[in-house]
Length: 303
Image (cartoon, rainbow, N blue to C red; front, side, top):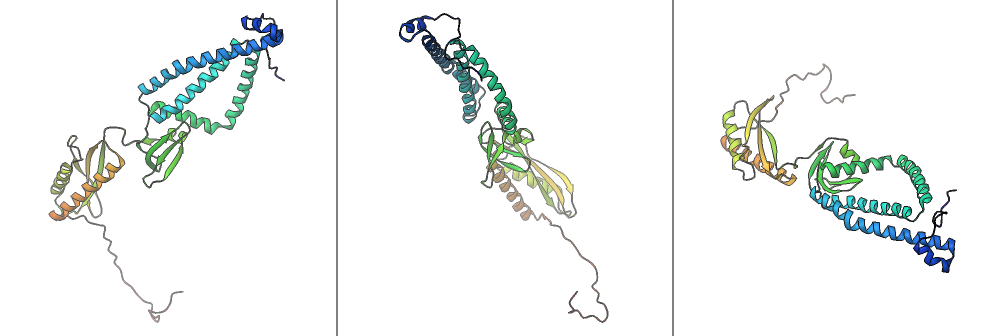
């Protein structure tokens, strides 16, 4: 059994507090009370220093890195927890309970091993959450894509990230999954390049179709003039010629992406119709003959 001392280590003389209490409480009890008072004083002093100095410094450092408010909250909680833990450790030493502190450290180390084995995935997600806060591959409000999923980040904690899909479904994703795979963040920069392939007929004027696509891109108010839109012939399909349009939008978001792309494609389709440029669709021609065996009726059921 691990001894838990109720007084300061033996062999030490009483301090001013113990001497003041000795006539009332007696020697052993006065020593225990003195240790408790010293523990309380040290704990309060260290805690106050942590709250008034350490926590504000950490908060200022996080704000300097321009972390989101929600991202700062769990890191500040960890800082406060560390201040309390440090205050307890210093208070035990200041009160003379050294043996008790050593015993508690041994118990904590053994417990940490057991808990670590039982919570490997949780710890992995926690560490991944710290990396997300530090590296900032995305922020709250960003549109991200990974594996077969995509959506807008609504919440980032130290264990999970919550993403709202474009079908209004909420995905709760362990942070380790986001740090172990490739994440696409289309809105991280201040502009986004978009592409769309228009298929025209082989008999249509390629130069005229290219000019129509560029004109409609330049006419759209949300498509950037610099870099300017471009069109390249990229495909020779079975039934059409593929012209890939490339254009840029500023301050991209998922809603802007869908809206601008839809408006641009609609405008080009309308111009193609006016100019007589065809957008063909695949046509399949089946050739052959249908024969009947002699002596069998067309109405005879097949077995």
